[in-house]
Length: 266
Image 1 (cartoon, one colour):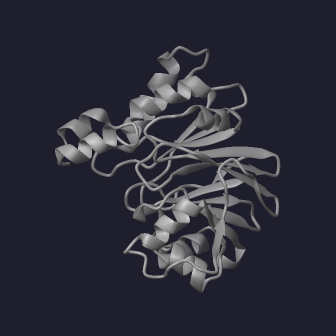
Image 2 (cartoon, rainbow, N blue to C red):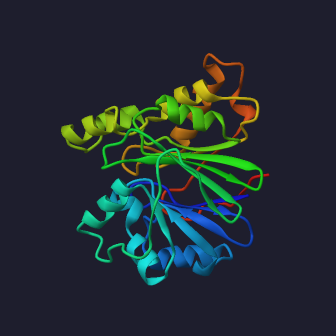
Image 3 (tube, helix red, strand yellow):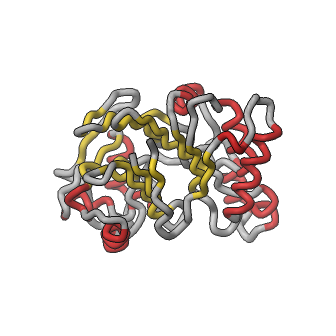
C-alpha cells in the first residue's frame, strides 16, 4: 500500500491511498489543476483514481470535488448529509449530480481491492466522518478534523495497522496568535480540532503492538509548526501511561501544502 499526502491543512486536504496501479483519494481540497499536477509528479493520472471519499463539507476538503466528479467522472462517496452539504456550499460552482455515491455510517463499500467503512467523528460541519480502509491485507484509519475521539472512532483506530490523525495546533501558539476569540474557542471545543498534546494523549489510548505508521496531519499554518507537532506527540507517547516509546512507531508529519514523501506500507 502507498499513502501520499498532497496537502494537509487549512489550505487544502487530499490524500492518495493505493498501489502502483490505481487508488482512491480521501478529500478533494486542492484545485483540480493542482491535484492533477501532484498525481503526475508521483506517477499517476485521474484515470487511475477509482473514487473520492469526502470526510466533510468544509471547503478545504471539497474545493475541486465538483470538477473531479462531474467533469472527470470520478465517483464521489460520502454520506447523504455530507453530499447535501457540498451542494449547498456557495463556493462549489460545479454541483454534484451523476457522480454522487451515497454511503452509510458503519457500512462497508467495496471498490476493487478496497474495503472502506465510514465512521462518525465530532466536528462542526453538517456531518463528519473518518474512514477505515482495508487494502490488500493492510488496514489504515483516517481521522482528521475532530475535537476528540468517541468510542466508535477509537474502535476503528485500534483495528488499524496505520493511522492518520490530526495534530492541528500548538496550544500556546493558538493562545498568543492572531485569531479572534470566537475562533479560538471553536478550535478548542469538543467539535473543533485536536492540539498536538491531545493528539498524543489520544494516541496513548489506542496504541497497540501491530500499529506501524502514525501520520500527523491537518497542521494549522498560523498556530503550529511541524517540529512542534512531532516532538509533542513523541513526548506524550514516550512519557504517557503506556508500555511504548515513540521509537516503537514510524511517526511522520504530512506537509501542509505540498506533496509529502510516499509512505510505502507493507
